[in-house]
Image 1 (cartoon, rainbow, N blue to C red):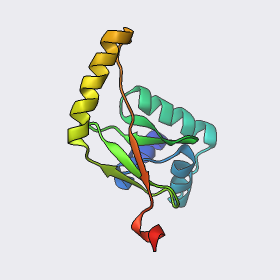
Image 2: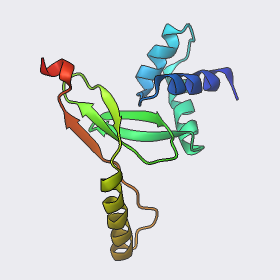
Image 3: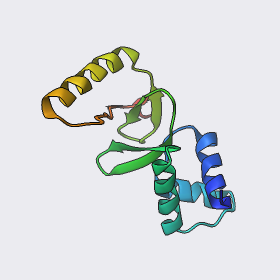
Length: 127
């Protein structure tokens, strides 16, 4: 594992929430680690392919990566400041799993998965 890849992994582990490629690059630069845009994108894609990171589209045009976790989870996103929180949706997850199974049977698609994000205004932006 290269030093850049280790630094990226440490960054996602410490941060705990999704980051865009640019956010990751800026945070690495703040830590004194120089990395160019091409390298960061290549490393993020590679970590996604290996199952270490998940690709998350938080909102149209906002693409981020999240540390892959055992349990499927969703996000709450502030429409104003774009703060992202992980939320547990156990009850909804059961219904969505059944829906995926029904869609797989009726459409003949395989490996169906979903992404569900909730949007609102956080308490800080509400004040």
